[in-house]
Amino acid sequence: MSVPRHRILALLQTQCRVFNTVYNPTRLRTGTRILHQRLKGAAVASYYPPRVGTISQLRALYPDYEIDDEQEEDWLEHLQIARSRGKAAPKKKKTAAESKKFTKRK
Amino acid sequence: MSQFRAKKLDIGGFVNIRNIRDHTKRKVFAANEPERQALRYIIRNTTLPQRVRAQAQLDLSQMHCYTRFTQIKNRCIMGGRGRGIFSDFRMGRYQFRLNALEGNIPGVKKASW
Image (cartoon, rainbow over all chains, first blue to last red; front, side, top):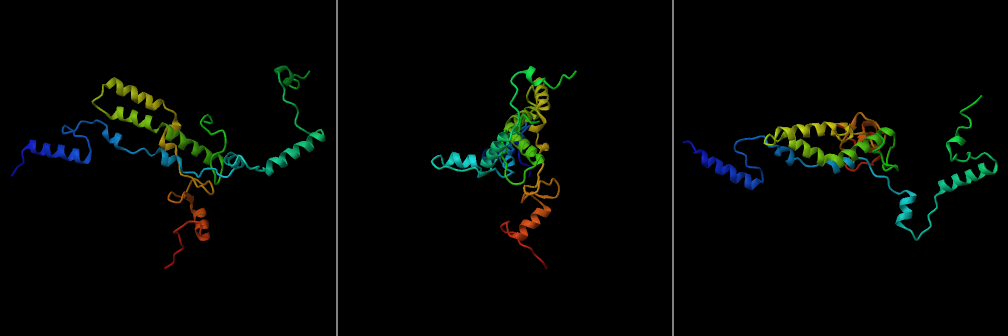
């Protein structure tokens, strides 16, 4: 017993409507396979754990509280000591001519 | 390709340049994924004019290599290793062992039979 072709096509059409796929009886390559793929970008991008609990984040979260950054304070103190001993970094040169002081030696 | 890299460090865990680079690639891939998929769709769709499809092929091949998924590699978030990674735990085999024995990984327990 053979089923007529139009019956099979009708079945296929219903199947496509039920399962929300594209009805394509002539089997053209329309690239719907790619439209069906899920986007995995969000999952891929969240692989590494985010950086949390930094001082700047805490300050942004709690603007009413004073939060000390010990490392920064230590560094500023170190800079202060270096400056008083005359060992601080030289001043930033503003023009090209100033910065070329040591490049041309005669 | 440091033009894509975040200006401030934005990953926790183990940090080295390879992990930062991989993280950058992941972010660039996520940002460009819809565009890539659209171009791929145009290329595969045989009902579209040949000229449009050729142009899409060209556009896709001209995109930056960081937008490609194959650039992404799973790395150990605890030790930065690139090989021997359990992708379920995002850790290298030795870091996995250490953390599992310490009890840091829920549901993982040493078995012996």
